[in-house]
Amino acid sequence: MSKALQHQLAKTIKEQGDMARDMAIAELKDLKKDLLELEKALTTKKTPDQGLLMDISHGAFELFRTASIVLETDNLQDQLQHAAEAGKDLEYLEKKGAILLTKPEGWHWFTPKGEMLFLAAPNETRLAAQKLQERITRKTPAKPAPKPQAPPKAPPISAEE
Image (cartoon, rainbow, N blue to C red):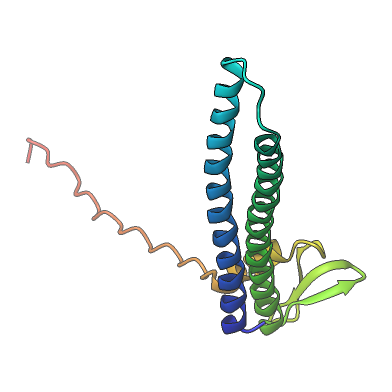
């Protein structure tokens, strides 16, 4: 998926979630007002209006519906983010020459010397990409510099001479 398409999709999902969030907040405020009216009616021992009871039940249902949309759009955004990261990892592995083998099972990479290295299990694409990146960017450790040798000690001068 191209980055532009991914960005547009994420933007659309976010807009829908924000719109549902605003609707849920407005419905919650209306529901609070209706509940306060019902409380007043019940404390004064007045019979509540049937319309008020319908408004409360309808408001509660609308609140459930819009809040569900908010939760679902948040979930979709998380899934989209994870899918994009998995796609990047898969693309990186393929670009660097890693192969998903069935025997031996898992992600493997062949070094320039022809060595086959196991990176990760088949379902651990992220881990395989991280291990490959570490392997490729690893620098060979520098050889330690030889310690400078101390100058040879002169024999002690004796007082007899």
